[in-house]
Length: 518
Image: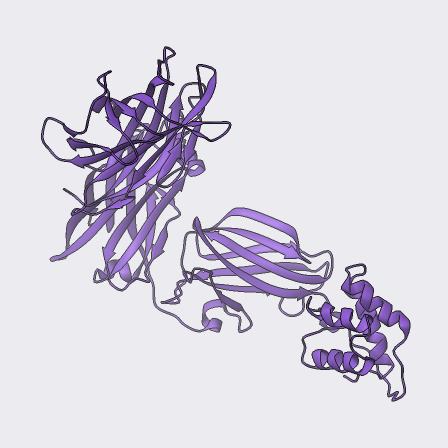
């Protein structure tokens, strides 16, 4: 049997709302159907999510839940069907859950008949429970692709269910397809992984230097509406020079799309296709009518690339900020133009570049979300940003001074982020006081530490640039005494009754009076 990867993608319930669906990796919930006055839903779980050839057993658990209380319903009789994407019935039986789980184990084989290891009840339903699953061996889950799990409730609370009901959960079993390509007299071993339907054929075009994989697919809007995304991966050997030393462009049915190219692995290049529902609908309107029954994944070699290194060579800016993303999968360069100090009401252009963290090569075809926070409040949000070149520009005008944090996240649909912090305004007038300094201010306002201790501590933190206050003229005054209003300010600030700016005015007074020397 081929090695396959399980990927539970979505569920659709045929009942009250035929277009409603839930999505989850490894489990899915249906929409709600009312049976005998009770609102119910089905939860389906299949494990493992990844299966190797030597461990080909599937475990399928089905649970009926009260949609209001989320409490499971026990002692339920089901009519269970498993169908393929063409609605051909592969498995059909009546099964009874002795407790809250209908639990079956499947051992796929190519025998024409199914074999069961379990017991039947007086109604001739096969029985199962959490501790005693029904074991089934036979011709189901033999290949990757789409499988429909249909469950109809036939018995509930020891009574027959007369109302028609049908819960349908769609399982997508991904398949690893190994194949070999001959190019210029050399053989290259590749792998294609689809987390959707079966791949029908794979073609190498020597003229275009492209690899295509064809998959059966219905591009009608009603068919793609419940699909959250289509995901696949192509694994290329690192020794195939025309791909490692060239850009790699990704296409769906001849239309260029954004794809993630990972060249950080030692032995393989991984090209990811992740086409979300919005992109599927856009592509549906652009694809030729004769191709509306297939999904064509394609990669092509692009322009030659040469390794480059160094911040200035990559960005043209020596002062670019460079951060590694939270998952260490991207090196992100960030700077602004005009260079120098950022001031309110200045028109600013932010530059963002995405690089491979290992090769330091700029990566193309990037999607990401972009957020700007100033003084802990979001002032700009741009989701689903796209940059075909890998170098993007964002224009923005700040209306006020303050600390700024730029957050770049969800890069190519992956939960990873990079953050950049800076200040907008005259740096000499900057106010920045760590929150933990409030403890010192509280203790001083309560006379737990004396004036000299408080003043010397503040003086040290200003000199060490832990605290930033506006530049202030100072004078020598060896006999100065801290007035009560400064102590009151400290107490109010420690209790969040006044702002950092108000507290900073007291610090400026201490500098002007010579009590603090900076």
